[in-house]
Image 1 (cartoon, rainbow, N blue to C red):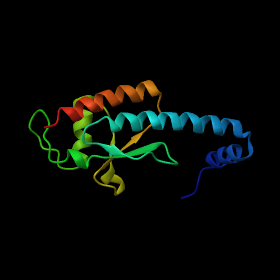
Image 2: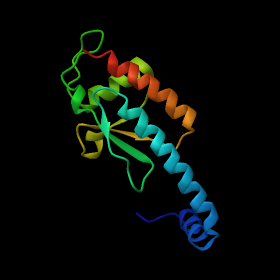
Image 3: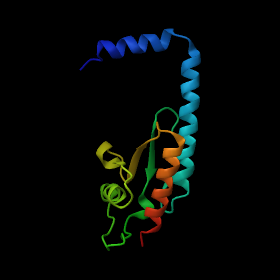
Length: 131
């Protein structure tokens, strides 16, 4: 499959246009990344390292496997954890196993910082509810 002509034109514009816009956007994404990394590091059982060149964050959920949700359902893998997060706190993540990276969850941080902080609070509560 090939890149569409629209994508190709956008790439040319990004590479030949003024660098100010790219630097500004990179700074914004770095700040958003740092907010989400901070939020994840405050969640018991989750860990992550800041990514260097993407707007996705991979967080290990290995520290939560084997725990049980408030209904007594065991979290056995990253898919079960992703399902638990969606059902318990309304935070949507992608299981890392869908990308061949288990037991991780993948999150997009190209969102406003207030949204990331709100999601972080819900993630903390969801992780804390596991026994």
